[in-house]
Amino acid sequence: VLCCAGTGCTSSGSEAIVNELESQLKANGLDKEIKINAVSKVEDAKFAFKTIDVYNVNEIDNASQLKLGTVNEVGGKAAFKYVITAINLALENKVHGTVTNAISKEAINLAGYHFSGHTEIYSHYTNTKKY
Image (tube, rainbow, N blue to C red):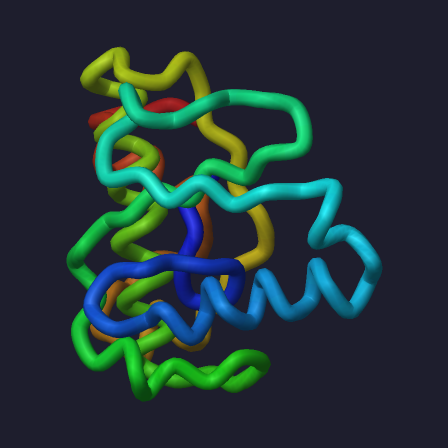
């Protein structure tokens, strides 16, 4: 799981997001059941049941300006960087596939990345013309 800008990341001062994830696990009675494993490379992931491997991208500037549930440039940049990281990990055969979730296209555009969605980002960075 690549996490930041809403789900968790320890990079560049965004430890508050990991803390929020842990807080939500606790609030929902899952903190004793589900563990967070922060990693900076895929090889350190546990890929274990009831463990969330949090991949640390280390490319998020101004992480302290991230505000959960709001649309802003910092969140857009973080989301974009994580999508690109997922694509690169797959292209380097470090992961066998990627899964995306909802991201704010408005925030990505605010950050200066002008794509209409995931499909166009994947197409561009994988040089795919037909999709």
